[in-house]
Image 1 (cartoon, rainbow, N blue to C red):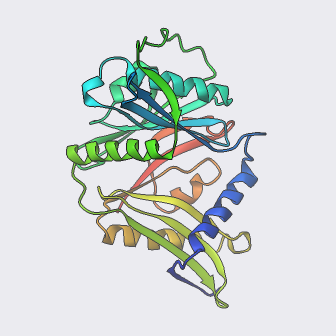
Image 2 (image 1 turned 180 degrees about the vertical axis):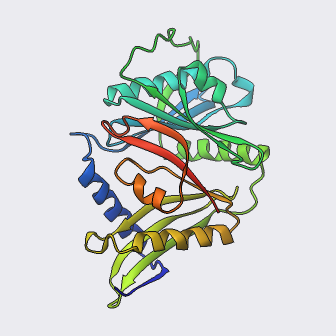
Image 3 (image 1 turned 90 degrees about the vertical axis):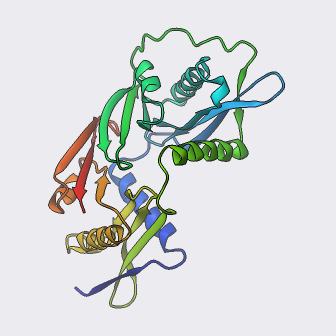
Length: 290
């Protein structure tokens, strides 16, 4: 069949993402009653000064992700980060989550997560160059054997809003930039395939971050056009543009139902395996040099 791969136009990215989500949900439906929610926590002193916080995302598969955990330098090593982790886990369990996931760098807080029982799934070397990125997991449906939460004394943890979430992300980004300067701003890569009539039949979304690490957010092919090589052509187009923008390796995280597609396209190195995510399935961490 005839098709053409071109850059996405306004509105295409949202449509592609929706279609990709629907395709995944058809294979693994969201848990009954579950929906993605975001919880922002902050720690303050008696005068209301911000001391730290974190963001918790609970997903439709009853899994949780702890992101952007931050404590002001003057207040570290006082149990604040540990209290935030435990509060996030408590909320995740309350939401019915059976698994918590965390990503961190060697210049961030891996020893802290080790202390709280998080197990290493994957180590990505040279991301960013000269450093390592770690992907960790912890089962929330098993006894953890942790000590009681640290006593924060006069400090308190409360739920916060979008403004605090932006402040947290900003502080963590500035810390990371100070540790490893980024080479450029994030670069978006958004491509679509159209048929001879101009109909959008497939698409790929992602980009390259300032450390030259590419990431695919969504890859979708309309069911009527699958098995015709369109997905592979989109992936190759993404790889070429990512390489042109400084990427030297592409890491992907397929599941047992689509891992064969990536193996066929040269993703032979398995750097990690996450069993029972989503429940009854397996996620693979894989890499391909560019």
